[in-house]
Length: 197
Image 1 (tube, rainbow, N blue to C red):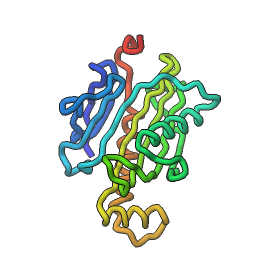
Image 2 (image 1 turned 60 degrees about the vertical axis):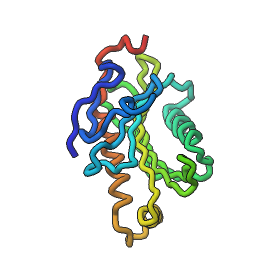
Image 3 (image 1 turned 90 degrees about the horizontal axis):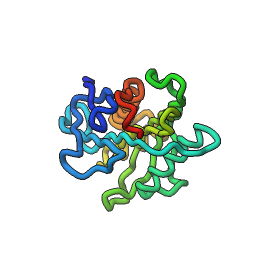
Image 4 (image 1 turned 180 degrees about the vertical axis):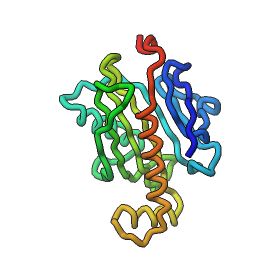
């Protein structure tokens, strides 16, 4: 996959993202704390996948892992997901080269989402977090991988249960989401700290 440097928040932050992503603010209103990118070239990124970068006030939790779980829970609530319908598929701490002293992590969660008025959508959420202590900010990078088609849902079910008979499309989309989030965490850089006041 090809990546390019993208300016966020008027150039105050830069990040490497796939070249095939389009800034969604050109198409619709986006909250000031977010940058949203959607697929414009369906050859690399699935047409329904989206990546969101969000700057939030640092959560006052006793551990960094609790902050990660808090943000995952909040996003899940926005997606209409009950806490007991979440399945953690992967979790790991990371190193963010431009934030060597700050906590960074990734978590992958499967959830039954009630987005867009449909109950049958299964959403895989790949969530990256950098806790930027200098600015008291939690920077989130989330990659939404919704599964709607019957074939995709069946393959995802086989992937999640460890049944090796799937065609691999579901796991390929999940791995792509992880790759994009990992590249973002690795490359994200603050160019202008005045963004934080």
